[in-house]
Image (cartoon, rainbow, N blue to C red; front, side, top):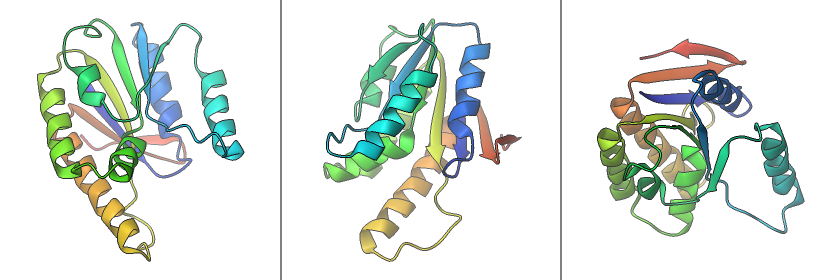
Length: 169
């Protein structure tokens, strides 16, 4: 089962994803894509809060870019993988000047081949203001295309607003 959970900032999407994987009864492999910014205390506080909220029995993988490597092979097939989040993964790729169209295609191919359970969290950024920079608009467009491609591969897609999930697929 492949599930994509979309939502805006502070919509409750991560909490919903965490509850979903917890309820599965399987061992959870939590894939954190957040980059470390040692000089950003507020960012580090956010990471610390996420870490404190996660159950201690979850296996943690901190991986900013290589989601394909995690999904390939059979190492986690018997577990449930939670990727939080695709938005930061995309941002990391853009920052390193990767071809995001190609990387999105590679991720979707890995998802299509993956036979284990995976829950992915991603931001829906196309419902608000139009970014005032070319980079911001490029990111918004790439995020929208990524969400569409992953939603196509997913068995289930949920949109979370105000902590409430709405089934889209």
